[in-house]
Image (tube, rainbow, N blue to C red):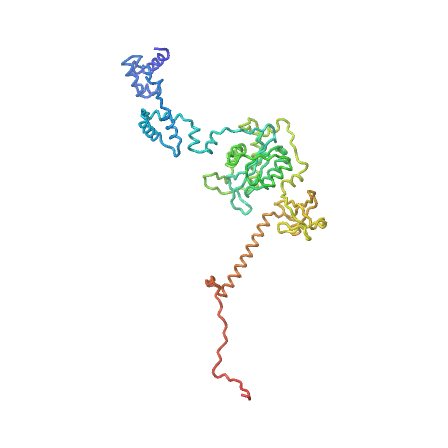
Length: 483
């Protein structure tokens, strides 16, 4: 008996000694030793029969031998295990045994087939049964893009927040959040809240806040990034954003379509917003929960989000970098590159370029007329119009890429009217005209029997025709002398 086996026998004897020598109940011994009663009873029986040798664990005779399955049967079992839909091991064992009998081979045991299939590569099984997409999400080797300095790489994305707020008409609505995050420091360069779905103008607003200097001294993140990393959303692939990036010398980089893992850092920030901020605010309604009554307005949510970013998120150690985002952004005395002026930045970000021809009465654009005295010398010429969709009171006119003037709409001068307000008014006017047309046509149908318009409401009954009275029998007729 070698040393390890002897030590094992002595340890088991020590556990059952209180029962053998001191008369301690076996249940009490089992409770103190954390061993089942059945196991202790078996050890006692072996000790009483064979002494210390009975307490030694017996080795299996076939421990170091294995059942070798012939290669054709092994490959057949693996092929059956990889077929879709998935078969049970019992079915595979039965099918392999049938083939083994036809080949004149000894039928393998169920445990042999079980061990063979259990030992197969799980990646191969997932690829065969779940498909390439699930396999890629689990087993594909990832390339982690790592920025080496601040403003080297910014990520941009949108999310629909799990909170209800009140709009201008006190109606509940879920807002959209657009975020610009610095990849190196994980600091937030800019964000924008809106009640409408993501658009190029929302992306431009977030970029404007991210690039230009903030009025808050505790928010120094700014500058023009070297690269902007986004998904394939229509707002990011729009000509407006492409032109902005080209003018600011920003390289556009898109993630692989259908694989959002490359944007994990900004997705992680969205999760942080849900877990740390939104869950503490009234109106928070995550997926699967009943909708809560909204209390906050969009400006109030914007203020709460800014306070959370500037006072908490930027100053807490990040789980990935181990450094607070604001500290990491400032650690090397980084000096950001800024545009020449805010006006030039606004001209790029917040305006959309369109081509128009100057007419004798000015420039016709969006069903409005814009006029400026300088346009008198350019009648008939093609010019480029830049405008802010949120403010249609004036447009900026360029001729051969040279700023010409600011043309003003006299009807809107002195007030700010958004393009959406104009479109809404035009649609309302069209609806009113359609309603008037329908009323007039209905009136015609009531007075004249037009096919398909026989059903007339009781409130509008066609009036009876006025008839002349019949002449009486005593009516005298005038006679002439020539009759």
